[in-house]
Image (cartoon, rainbow, N blue to C red; front, side, top):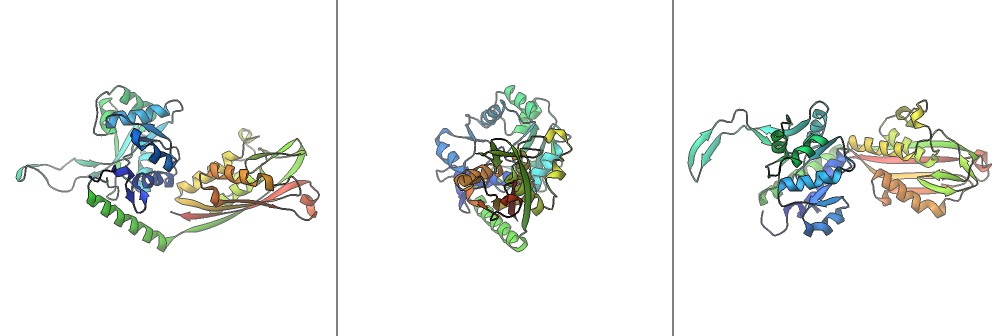
Length: 365
């Protein structure tokens, strides 16, 4: 590639290539990401806010380092992707994930359609193209299977499909995409810039903006604290509910489900199901956020209003914003938490309980 800066850290449309790559997987609903880096790139990796591990001297050693970092809390499956493929379409990722429901390994590819020559400045021979494919990533695997395959494969390999096949793992081919280009030569950056520009233009023409509202109420009961927007607030009473009764988080969760036309919490987590009794409300909110991302939406703003005489919300509002932002994996600047009283009117005025209103705005990527 030339130029001195590794291609995954070069700027593409104002952002590092690797930032675009990670965003592609977040947009596909995947949030547990690990990047493998050169020791010199620690500061760059930390600037992206992604978990990282130090890679090895070869491609295979680098992938193994990332796999080993996940082994203490292993996922059931894993996708391994080239950092230099920042434009991988959501459909390509989804096809690999679907294939893993019925196969131990799957990878995207495109059939070779051009004539193939051998040459050294002039044509010295031809090669049949039948049955040949251009390999792409992400390449998906059963986690335990591909980790064992890497541990048993000390040599380097062109990709992880080669490692899997050496271990006897059958790999299913899924549909690749011409847009899933690998940045290899300087001209590839020009093409990637054009593709990003075209995507942004299409988004601008077909932008889907959703707004949802949520409302929830919980009565007081005996206790010494309340959970509000993910923060434990000392109080002379507790809130009564099937779960932890976090009225603010429940309202926001319903706002997100509403924007997606996906009903409410009760539809996804029925109160009749004993497994949800006493559940922490972040489970519900995290599910709503992940569902939004899987549908191709970005959460652009959340606004929660807590209605009560007491406890006082102001001293805890910033901690609440931070807690909600962490659960939804968005910037704190996109979260608003505020409070009001009902001027001593109604059940909140009589301090019989707390109500919450929430609004969420989603924009399709």
